[in-house]
Length: 232
Image 1 (cartoon, rainbow, N blue to C red):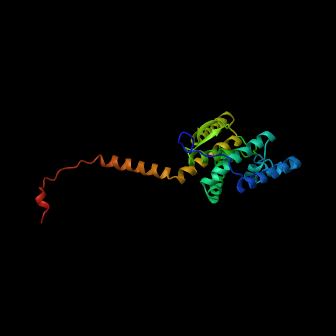
Image 2 (cartoon, helix red, strand yellow):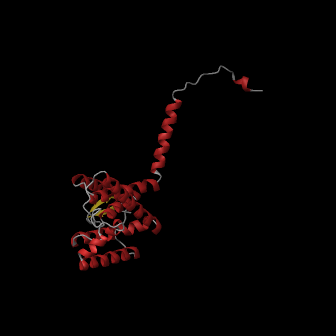
Image 3 (tube, rainbow, N blue to C red):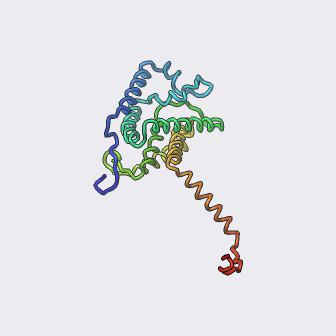
């Protein structure tokens, strides 16, 4: 609990095996990427379709890094978000949420490409990080954490803020790169809604309104019988 009685969470408080293994893997991949250079990127980075594109690139491109400062920021964000997500979900749940967000982002982006969205290639972990902000923000919306280690903020504002930024970047530069980030956030938001039963409750409320609207067209008429008429 925080000092004002609100629930709080310590982001990045534990160097868990999940965090360690993930960051070590990404570090090794990034070192190989820097050492090998362009030949490595031609095989594993998302290339524009028809220009050296391979099917596995829709997966491997997410494990690659960008410039060193951006890559370190990616790793720091994972360090902060993975421990609470690992605590909120079991390992299988986190893996499923990650894979669903990735799958939704890739499929939605391919649909947008078919409609004429520019394909400029892609590499980096930004889409997964945006998905994780949505998972953290909407799985524990009232949790508080220290933004920039100073400002107490509810988790739900991190979730909505990440989605807003992803949407604005997509509007500013509509390419497959920004589409992947935005659709990964949407995919995570949909997964949380499904897990929490939000969409089922919305469907039930809509169905109840339809039934009430149909019943309102009927008029109840008193049959005129006395109560004793029903007694044998």
